[in-house]
Image 1 (spheres, rainbow over the protein chains, first blue to last red):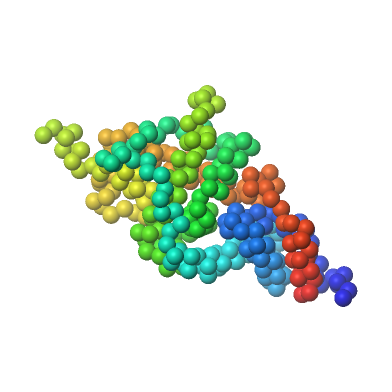
Image 2: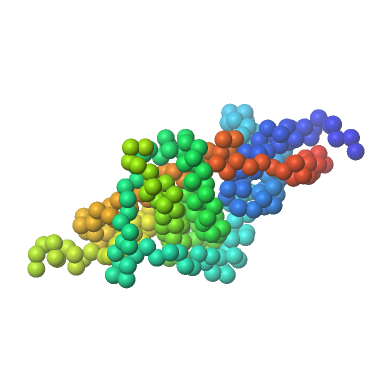
Length: 193
Length: 94
């Protein structure tokens, strides 16, 4: 088949120019290369269909990411409820409190500016490492809330879980991330840094 | 009973305060819990610190997820050549 037809070229060009970025976006939020690849493909196909709606005002990358975001949320809506029905995947986070309910280890002050820290490659690596240690479903739910900034009511509706469940998952995710970042960065660096 | 003693009775323990701090990022707490948390934070520097960390964390995750598209991203990984070829082939069928 002759594939040099001009009609197909935009999507192939998008793949060249934005494929990796879209892939990383999807991979970070799904933790599955297979799923991320599928989402990239679906996104580019949908973009091809909707190409007339691209008004050129938003950058191409932003437009494509917007489509991917919809695909991603759809995907999580379809797959997460069944997985969550199997029960939480982070049933036993380390207990940070004594039996009386006090902190076992006193929280240390986190110093620095978030934006500035994120410009340091070593810190980004630490954060990526801590994120990747979250149990996968917990991570997906956490990112729906924090990265896609979807309200908790909406998440509960979409995923068919109770608010109590959701809050507990988010709480555990935050405890874990905060613990990991303290151990790998904030708790082991001299204050001056 | 001293004022401090009275306040302590109203105050949840750190375990519960940490949970309420997290919940308060996802919903408006009911009055009783909001007051309990307030009282606890008034008395407990460690939980105030934890509260600041949660805000810090939210900011970090925000920057982190928004920067994922850039090649310098921590999650730097690329489409495999196979996947790229497969997607390309599929796109060319359209």
